[in-house]
Image 1 (cartoon, rainbow, N blue to C red):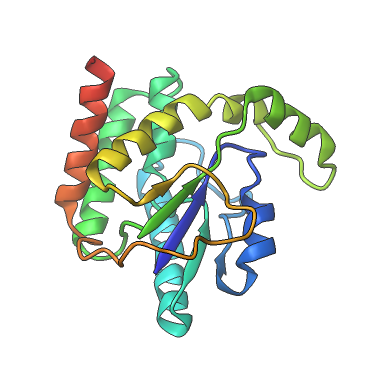
Image 2 (cartoon, rainbow, N blue to C red; image 1 turned 30 degrees about the horizontal axis):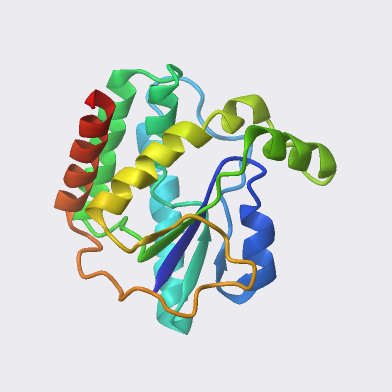
Length: 203
């Protein structure tokens, strides 16, 4: 079982994961300062995401469970930027192609369950201001991700019913979990998700 915990900055992902799933945690990617900023960065970030997915699979194989602090398949981030006018259609199409190829190769896959935390903008700001342990760079931009992130996982609910939970349960992981998915590495799942996103966008 691979579980993803996601939401915008200050949504409580890391705190919840450390409190309830520390022994199974795949930490969020920590910037090193060496990330490329010019040219086509698609291959770099796809590789980063594949590395996180591989770590999740290894943890799952060792213990039966892996819990990822944010989705290794970060395509939702590019979708959100696109919807906010902060990314180009060209970048989106490149990243879809790279992710699709990684899925087909078994280097990247779909989690069995996603827990989504989407506090209000005021709540996110209050949490950010109350947490002196993290800088939360680009907080204003990340706080705007909530609306397109909701679109992404609403589409995911249509494509993968029963695999999205719209909260971080206060007592930890739900007692009843969905069955591990058999289509973890099926590119057709990504195609269906994107089709649903486009349908919702045009509705």
